[in-house]
Image (cartoon, rainbow, N blue to C red; front, side, top):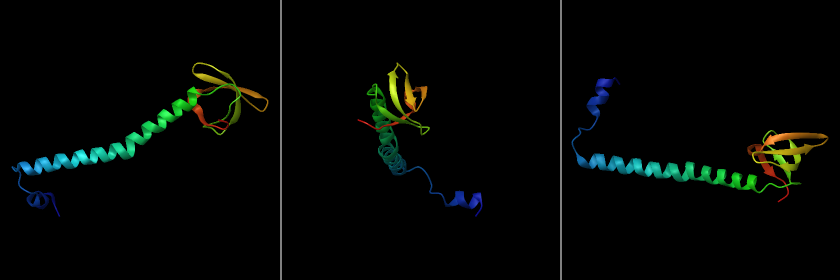
Length: 101
């Protein structure tokens, strides 16, 4: 099928009902997109921020990189953690999970 045949099959414009129904359909798609994609992501981000703000000294954590450690100091935007014999300074946002809550 070429473009000319496709355009000839298209319904003729000029009817107000077609525009209104199209707008309603786009609105419904937007609502579905919001409730299934955007809202759950916002809730997940909020939960992570709450978890990071609640970190305190001696919490056992796992970082996104898979490193397990114990928090020995909490700073404004970072943490000092101890993993075995090493001390690491990591960004708070890299915390994936708190093991003891």
